[in-house]
Picture 1 (cartoon, one colour):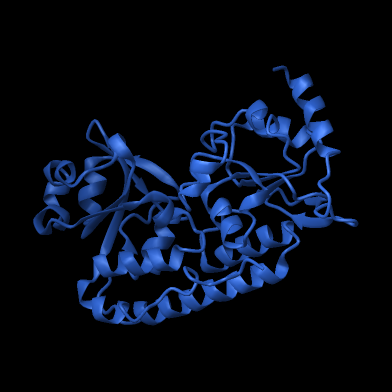
Picture 2 (spheres, rainbow, N blue to C red):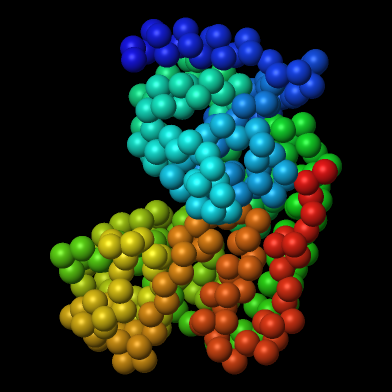
Length: 317
């Protein structure tokens, strides 16, 4: 399908309004590009980004989803019931616009650039949702998605629930007396570790759980050498479950650099589901609680009193 045909198809889609859903005056959203986007018809949504999909389900808009990306792992019904447009960083414009969306909600960082340029040029509103890894950024994400759906009241309900969970998490975190040093390892290929630095979801979830990132000399994810691993002195290695590409405990313990750290001596390796741990969606406080228990088993009795409100809140109407 040519780009010209894709744009023509999207123009037709942009004129397609479902009865009772089109907004007479439109809703304006200020997105991650520092642009105002006007949404007239949030009836047919393509959601790109697992946290965005999770928020839309929590707000009761799953019936308007016509497509999701492959990171939309929760709830499981998303990928089971909705067309999959592929991985959020490897999208095709034809795959997205072929679903005739009236709104595309995409996490900041979606791509590639060529695809995003076509989507921006299309006659379909594209909202880039900021990825700010902080408590405030999480709440703002929920508010923005809710506003894009003309559902500010539902978003207020969900942000209140998440705020309650974050407050409970702060109380739990206050009981940590000796923070452990955690190294998040995204991959360990050919003996080379890709570790998370500052300004990452991994850095923030470690902090929310009461730990300290053992890597603080750079931003983002970088491959580090053995000397840097030893110098970081991690107490724990944290990773995510990625199927056959997952980092596994024995590989870490047998690694010549990690073998010289407390990680190997104490057999302290943690692996959690990726979207749950790093997605920064409504379940983030619960994920941080679960990580905190793994980092500090003595906190388990107190953590059991932490009942995440966002997991059961009814914010769908």
